[in-house]
Amino acid sequence: MAGGPGGPAPYRKNNRAERAELAELVFDLKLRGLSFRAIEEATQDPNGPTGGKRVPAGTARDLVRDEAARRVDPKVDAWRAIVVERLEAAHARLDRMEAAAHKVLERHHITVNNGRIITLDDGEPLLDDGPVLAAIDRLAKIEDARLKNNESLRRLFGLDMPVKVDATVTEVTQQDLELQEMLREAKAHVAAQEEELREGAGGEA
Image 1 (cartoon, rainbow, N blue to C red):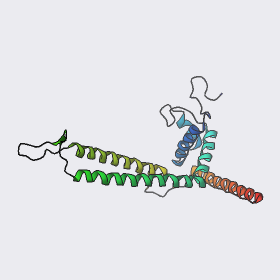
Image 2: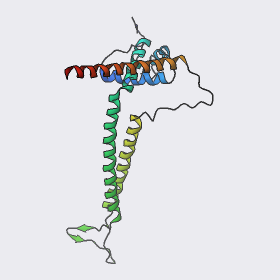
Image 3: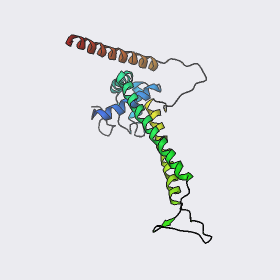
């Protein structure tokens, strides 16, 4: 039995969300050049990417195929477009909030107590720093929200993935060929599904 007494427990299909997350992780390991056997060895390490939850080589292959199909699925592009639209709308709201906060900073705020303007000994109104400090705090929160939106955009398009730069000529490995073949198969599978949908729609017309 895989994962015998005392050994690392193998991955089991618990739920769709966990499988999707694991598929993305395994796909990234494959992109780094690991073989499926190496992925199995890496995942059974308690300090490894899965915390010791072993992913057998055969399961790793299936997960990579699933993730490859997901990444070439046209529905993913449509979903990205929706998310981008929402993030752009959020950016616009943040810009308006930032402009309003700057207007607060530009104004002079006087201290009022029980309807009376508080003045200094020289008769000058006592300035109220409260609105200014609140505006500064709001600007800091706006900037934090803007950074989080930018991070979401980068993750959405995979721009945060580590980039490996080699000074020498890159050699195409067997793992690269396997991954390319999986991507071709995934594209062909998606194209076949689209063709079936078109034929079904034509038959119902």
